[in-house]
Image (tube, rainbow over all chains, first blue to last red):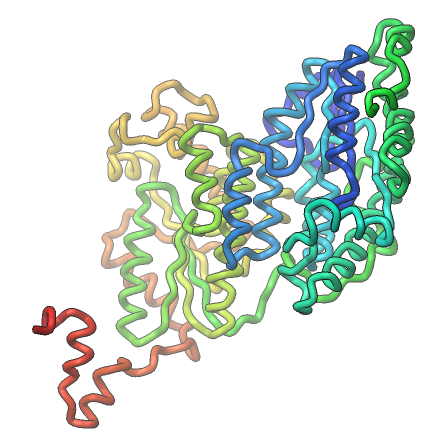
Amino acid sequence: MTAPRFYGEPPPGIASAELPGRLIVIEGTDGVGRSTHVALLKEWLEARGYAVVNTGLRRSSLAGRGIERAKRGNTLDPLTLNLLYATDFWDRMERQILPALRAGMVALVDRYIFSLIARARVRGLSAGWVENLFGFALVPDLVVYLDIDMEHLVPRVLSSTGFDYWESGQDYLPSPDVYRNFVEHQTRLMAEFRRLATQHAFTTVDARGPIPEVFRALCAEIEPVVQSMAMFESMNHEVSDPLKMLA
Amino acid sequence: MAPEPRLGGTAAGRAPVPKPELAEPVTGLPGRLIIVEGIDGSGKSTQLDLLRKWLVNQGYLVIFSEWNSSPIVKSTTRRGKKLQLLSPMSFSLIHAADLASRTYSQIMPALQAGAIVLADRYVYTAYVRDTVRGVNRAWLRRLYSFAVPPTLAFYFDVPLDEAMKRISVGRSELKYYEAGMDLGLSRDPAESFRLFQGLIRREYEQVIGEFGLVRMDATESLVQQQQRMREIVRPHLEGAMRLPNPAAEDPLRVAGLLGHHQAERTGALGPTP
């Protein structure tokens, strides 16, 4: 249990009382498999008795729909988009993440401020400005970065959603070639993620392998973070190998 | 290992990005940006409207930008206000999104072209309102660094009692955030509004000194205020973009034509038989 720490000045309206829960963030680029693993982890944690709240980008009741609508238009500049995402992020921070942490739950967050920082940076927003903006974010107990390379990412994206307009950086890259833009945009994003991973000491998990392997590695990283919340260590051993969940 | 509790990395650790960076202040644009500030009931909108008419009359190209009017952001703000979803921080962020959107789609392009842009409320409104709601001053100033610094910023100074008298709002007309009900100052909307405006007025005093706003005595008569305002604006107008001559009428007159088609198109002649 620790007093909440923020990256910058503590935002208003947040009491500084200790938060008994755990904030665990899964970061990684588009198509790396974050949502799959968040779903698996939620089930795994709940099976072990931990109450879990999961949340991800654009899921706020305040700004979620507004972002979807804005992205369909054609007069959206990167700064406004970033601020809409910041609004969405803050709303979820206040309504989902903080209440969960106060109640002693595990908040499992699919993408945090780091995805927003990486996206803003590749679109030319000032680093100092972006870092000031997201100073209101709570410092997580654990940030896992799912690391992948282009060789493994491209087939994964092609076999699922295909090359999305925004995930290919079509809004700012000059080429009409979607594949080339996807590779260019994702290469830039990954460079930003790796820079952030070093700066903020993320735990990096190799996401190139098959799902069970990545999942096992994730569980191993998360285990020690949540363990201190439990009364008996034995509770954590009642549940069998997490991989059986995938069968 | 504990994560570094600051977002500001060392310059050496940052990837090189193309310049100029978005969100940093833009100066030296050929247009003029004139803005008005003041508490509700200070008469700032009336004065800005009179200034606009004067400028248009002289043939200047004038663009008007209103607080909270970005079509991209408006639906979210409306939703937040209607359902009372806004906290001090989300209130602050959504208004920053509004100005960002207007800056990049409306204000900056017009200033680049050399036009005169008039804005009813600008960053200072966010500074005073959000500070009163408890948002950090330094954070706010950095947040709004993307905004173009105005050529002239007027503050219409009016005593609280006078402003209250002018609007003489009924309880039912006051909206939740407008009355500052989210601050929990009073359960009575009218009383809350009065207390909220008082706090805002006090914070304006800080902002005026910090950013050099031009203080206008808003208790003077309307015409006196407008004359004073025009005197201050006049020296800043030289070289601002003017509208070319009225588009359609002149070439018609030169060619000795009457402009039937133009009149039909605008409906002046009614439907054609």
